[in-house]
Image (tube, rainbow, N blue to C red; front, top):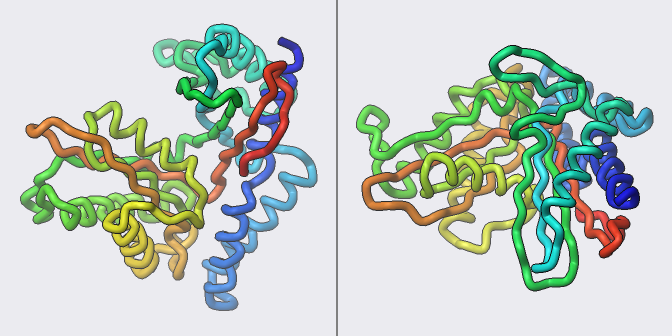
Length: 292
């Protein structure tokens, strides 16, 4: 298991310290759009300097290394219990090495044992597939952006938001407006239309595994994603809420079936420090390929 543990520690290090290329390209494009000499341009330049320093020093992009979330796709005979044990050991080792802040506390006592390991920490999602490969993707989601997530139950009369895509559009944009400069923008939205209160939020976070520049294969959802991205960036909120043309870097929307009595729209928000990375592993646990 030492090979697998070393691989997971390296995955954590890279996720914490290095921004994915698709996110970096989006941030650079945003910097070009902002007017020279504005606070928005200055904020994005500081973000870029932060990215450069974190990578060169192999230190966390943000002091809030957030919740540690793993998504594991594996074949039928994969040892899930063994992987979870090793992942917990790797998280503890990565914390000791400084790749993660001592960031997980007991919710009742507030006690922090300095390991980032405890009930529900780290979070692991397992998915069985028929491919022989083992794919491990992970995400570090900070508390600031987690705090501005939102969930709506349609219809909402005061917003004139009905149970249709226009109603979904209204509440998603409302979530952006309510967040304002909170959550360390420019941000990325992960959205789920449908599901229940739990699965909706879970699926909205799963949207963050998509690349910034991909397009939704569903034409209606693709139009909605592009519309919300354009409209959100026209609100003038800008980086860190300082004003400007870049409020959102991307919008990713998924759909789950629902029961007729419920129509939830769940919105998760990711900060500019979009720490998401993944690997494919050999059967021995060695890294074979980086996914982002």
